[in-house]
Image 1: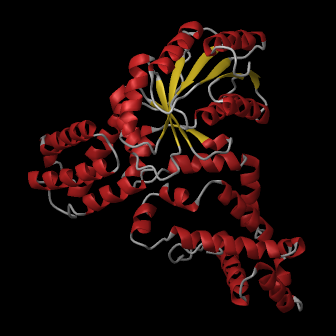
Image 2: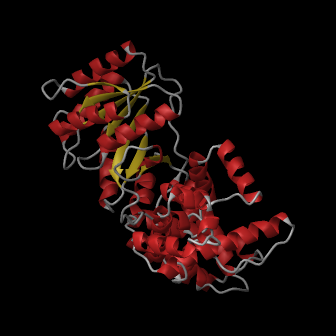
Image 3: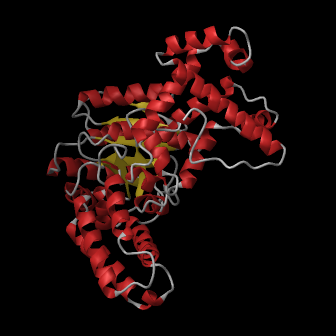
Amino acid sequence: MFEGLSQKLQATFDSLGKGGKVTEQDVTNAMRDVRMALLEADVALPIVKDFVNRVKERAIGAEVHKKLRPGEQVIKIVHEELIETLGDPGRLHFAGSQKPHVIMMVGLQGSGKTTSTAKLALYLREEGHKPFLVAADTYRPAAVHQLVTLAKQISVGYHEEGVTASPPDIAKRGLEAAKAAGAGVVIIDTAGRLQIDDNLMDELVEIKKRTNPAEVLLVADAMTGQEAVNIARGFNDRVGITGLILTKVDGDARGGAALSMRAVTGVPIKFMGMGEKIAKDALITFEPDRIASRILGMGDLMSLIEKAETLYEEEEALRLQKRLMENKFTLQDFLDQLQKIRKMGSITQLLGMIPGMNKLQMQGMVKDEEVEVRIRKVEAILNSMTRIERDTPRLLFKDKTAASRKKRIAKGSGVELRDVNDVLKQYQQMQEMMSNLRKGKFPKIPGLNLPGL
C-alpha cells in the first residue's frame, strides 16, 4: 500500500548526502520533497502541512547539532513523527462493557464491510473468544446471504431475519440470541450506502443506542484517497467511531487514507484487511512502528517472523534443523519449504519486510517478477520428480538412470535440461555449505544465491 510513498521518501533522503551536518537548507529542500510525496500519496493537505511543520521544527531545532549523517537524522525524525501520526497500535478494548461485548461495523457500500466482519470473527476466535454474527444489512439482500455463508464457512454462530424487519430490531434480537448461545463477542454487520445520508446515520445511531457497543469500527477502502477524510469525519461526527479497519491494503492504494483518517478522527487504525479470502492472515492488527519502518524502507522483520511462526511448529523447525545438520535434507524437504514460503504471501511483500531489500528493488537489483518466475520454475521442476526421486536425490546424480530421469523431469515441467541441472547443482552447493558448517568452516556465500534461485 505504501510502496509509492516509500520510494519517493527514500529518494529524498538519499539526496541529503552522506556526511556532515544537516543545514536549514537541507531540511527545507527535503521537506519540500516530503510534502509532494505525501500529497501524491493522497494524504489530505492539512495533515501534510502539520506533519511537515513538525518535522521541520524538530530538524532545525536543537537536534540539528547531533553527530548523525544528514539522511539518518532526518529519517529518524520522520520515522518518529510518522509513528505519532499513525497513532496507537490496533487493539480492541472491551474493558467496562458487559458480555457479550458488541462490535458494530459501519461503512459505505463496497468497502468490504461484510467480508471484514467474517475476518474479524475468525481473528477473535483465534484469540480465544466465541464470536457471533448478526446480519443487520437489510438494504442489500445479498449481504444477508453472504454473511450467513461466511459464518457457516468459519463455523461461528449467527442471527438473521432476512430483509423485512428493521435493522435496529434485528440487532437487538441478535444480541439476545448471542446471549442465549453463550457468545463472548457479537459483531453486527450494518447497512452501507453509496454515500453518507441522514437515513443511514439515523439508523446507525438507533442500533448503537439499542446494543451499546464496546467498539464502533469504520470499515474503509484504502484506495478511496482523499475522499476518505470526508467519509471518516461524517461517520465519526454522527455515530462516534472508536476505530478503523482499512481494507484492500494489498491493492494499488497509495497510503494516504491511513494517515488522513487517523489524523482527522483521532481514533486508531485497528486492523488492515488483505484480499478476499477468509483466512488467519487476511486481517492483521495495525502496528504503527512497523508501518512507519516499511514506509521508510527499513523493513519489518517482526511481521516476517510472525508469518513464519504461523507456518512452523517448534517441533517441525527442530526436525528440519536436525536434517540440515545431519546432511539428510532432501529435495522433498526443499519442495516443502518452498511451498511454505509461497503461503507466507507474495515475494514482493516478503522482500519489503527485509531491511534494505526495498532499496535493492528500487535500483532494479532484485526484480519481483523475475524472482516469482524463478520460484515457479523451481517448483514445477521439483513437482515433476517422483516422490522417490525427491526422497533419494542420488538417483539424479550418480545413478545410471540419472540422465533419462532428468530429461523426463525437464519435459514434464516444460523447461530446458539445463534448468533441471541448475536446480540440482545449487542443491549440491547447499549440501556442501552445510557440510562445511558442520566442520566449523564458514564459506563465503556470494550475493543472495539461495537454492534454486
